[in-house]
Image (tube, rainbow, N blue to C red; front, side, top):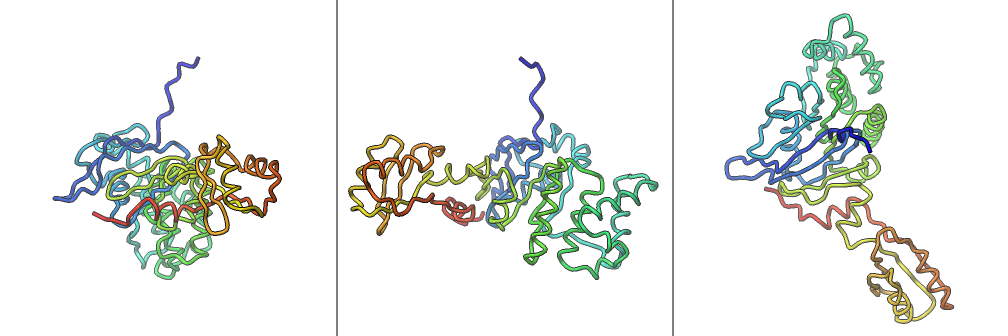
Length: 317
């Protein structure tokens, strides 16, 4: 049995709260993000996403509770945390009269990267975000999507281990969003841990391996992106249609221990199972084995957007 200590999480918060005047922006948020996660942070405007990211980025101090980044307290070890993270707010300023390379060189100097190394570092991050050919361009001449990628290059300049990205695809056209998401996937493959808040839930569903849903400062769900449907809705379900009376089919399926319940919906049945690991094979076996003609059997698949709408009320503070 190994005596090695468990790996330190990328982010660990415990009962994290933040109050602004009489408004509670965060309420006892306990959250864990593991190293290597591409973690989706989901919530309506005003839910507490940006407040959480700003606390993790050391720009805000919590009213109570604790937050650690790679084992370092965001309050007590703020300087150390700043060197481990790259924070990209939803709105960030750029110097439009500067060239792209000058802009990145400036931030490289701010992180005390030696001048002899900065040119190569700038080249590396520009290649990573696909802006090598724009190196000598004025920032003001770049499109919105290119400026977003430049903002990402800026937070990568010091090679942070954790990226905190607040709506990085905000305001981008579909092509620019796709390009941004491809860059984030590459960064994850390179070993970066990424927390991304976004309203584009369909993209988070395919991009992220884990997620958290927050509303009115309170955590509703945190876990695998594939587990959110089963935990927050009524569980796994299948649509069934046969050539026999609905009541007959319903009676046969209710007799099986795998079945949780069966609802009649127009000319079909919706069959809920007790265990989310159960597939629809037992349904086909039951009906065909009883001599019924199976016309339709498919899983009821709902997307992250629908789950989000079902479990939240869109309420803000």
